[in-house]
Length: 225
Image (cartoon, rainbow, N blue to C red; front, side, top):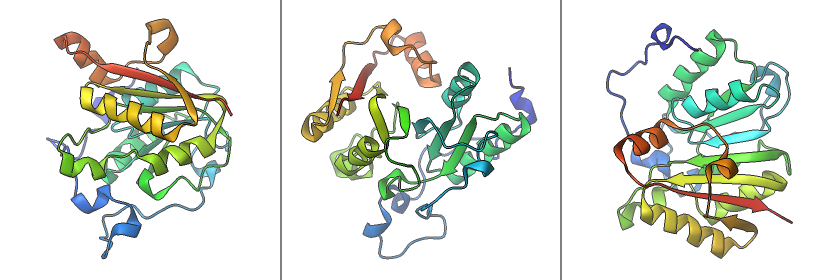
């Protein structure tokens, strides 16, 4: 168990959102603010993981990393990389990973809408997209962290028979995921998920939903080409 009192978070009340510009790909910005995560072309994995190898799994929108760390502890032979858009969260999570000497977990400050060119083709065995910000208002849908272009990148980096795990407690977001997967057409997917099939650690959000009796929705998509 990690004693998180050793790693106080820099904000007493963490902000849920950041500057609106950061939720768009850099190609759509007329002016790129200093706070924007610049696209990454290449990563030296020796600086990220203790074994110096590339990641096997991706946690997109890893937040403060509960799932990321739990998954890393449960699977010491697997390198899991968190991708997060909030810089202060990334810096805090890095301090935990370094302080606890967790060799198979890493995190990068990234906007996935700019692509995953730093990840090799057909190298990832599992991708987690768990309880993302739903941006429920129609005019804000363009801020969502997944679209057809992102699905295309996930398909590129995924190994054959690899899985993408989607979860949300927002029914409209679930329907959006189903619509995207159907439109993209290159993953087989199943939304009839039992716990044995899911078989990954719980996020804080899932635990909260279960405690409050709030329904949530899950999809497992598989690359079969």
